[in-house]
Length: 72
Image (cartoon, rainbow, N blue to C red; front, side):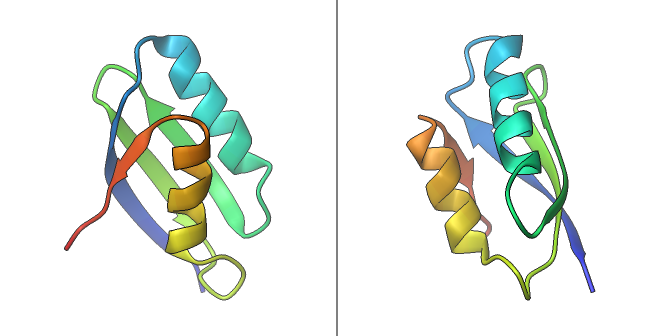
């Protein structure tokens, strides 16, 4: 069972930032689809929570230098 969710992302300066986030996440085990959009500052994410935790995705995005805005 996969989850699809849209997150806000902070710190993107250009379209290349969105490409970097998208490509990195798509190579990550458990991520089915990822699409970062520079214009809307959003990340459309589909992942399998049995294979990867949201905290791991958040950490990966932080390592790239961006901030994922997680719901409270």
